[in-house]
Image (cartoon, chains in turn yellow, cyan):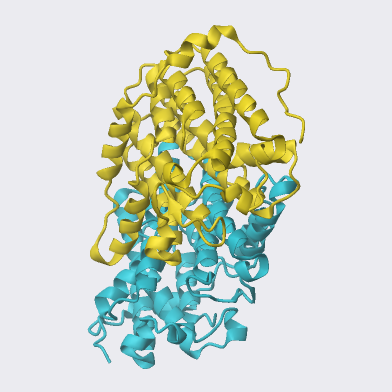
Length: 308
Length: 308
């Protein structure tokens, strides 16, 4: 078993109160309603495409990424409705990455969010296009609907483009499929690109749209990095201990694909301890922020406690 | 054989002089050099991804789309170098669409630009990711490198996002694979989305970056629409009469896939006449413009005369 990278981290007793804060459930319905009302300009000939896009986009879930963006904005007084297009765009991009990730050429997962994967339902070609279209439409949504000063909108777009490219989601997916040596550095790089970078983008976009200062944005990024690792460690644990029916996707996929995960590298007990420590670090990072970060603490707790 | 849609178009004798103008070959080298020098931030673990991206991006060709953008800008006095990042981004997006289009789930083409298709060379999973990454990196390039006022950069991004989404390339690809009834309306919708919209985006982005007026932009769009149809009609003709070795991709693919094309709907002779008429229309549209449109006429001629 490899040596855990954060062995000497200390528990911070000051964060104890934050551990009781709940997930901002009020935002889930707002995100779901907004996504359901999106128009992609469907004329009859492209209906199979928009149907597949909606099928995957509206499959539910806790909407962690858009809600991270909205909660970060709200922490600094920006109303969720004012920045909803950016939040929706990030959920569309997340959905696009899941659709492509589930394809036979990748994880070959037949189940997602408790229902048949996009390619199982609509065929591989339509699923690839549905992912491609969600990505394009996410940018269109930001361009057409997000009300913010042009330089701020550009910062948001830049943030997203970095998080989704070679230095983000797609780079991470590549490392994942190449299945290189499983060591701590590779694992951290894989996850900081594949999962962490988009989570960081959600937090940073919320901060950018709320007009936070540069130092505050840096602080927010630190919180997001810890949160991203917490998310991934928990994901790896759930793949081992979770049940398919609860997860809404096939459990045991990591083992089946011989993936390098926190669980395979450090073992389950140590992974659980790591998850606890990254929660602590994330909550601690929130304490150094200027905003009202109760919602962000609630999201952190949910990610730590989630069973799917 | 279906009735041709533009039967009563008149030949415009005023465009005769434009038909001798050459392709702006000086721009090909500039585009190629710029693309070759692009950095995608490659660290060792993501090398297979950036290698696949470069393989397809640097396979050569006449670079019609970026050069359309550059030539449109130059027609109004904007130096190509000043708007090269936008031109490169459009070539990256075009390359992404070709990579996904060649996949087994789509056209299943083993040959592209005279060499093995991306998925044949690197595998299906890497090819899908290379396409995804080129799309993301195209936006990043515009955000990080294109020097233009923020509202102009946003207009360019919006233009591209519309042209690549449901109302553009991906919508067109969907109609293509669904193989609906072959009639004039479907054919025109298919091609205006799959090919025409991105060609229009190139011309419009060149105009936007050169700061043309709204009426001029509308006029440019009219030219681009005719050019896009000319491009597609010629493409359909070449698929029938061209040879694989010259085309650099498999000839006869349309017939093999039982595609609805200008050649299959109207016959080869009528398609050739249509191509001639759309060239004439495009050259005529240029005459109504304020800029020095010699390069755009040369591009029109090349598209009409090309053998691949």
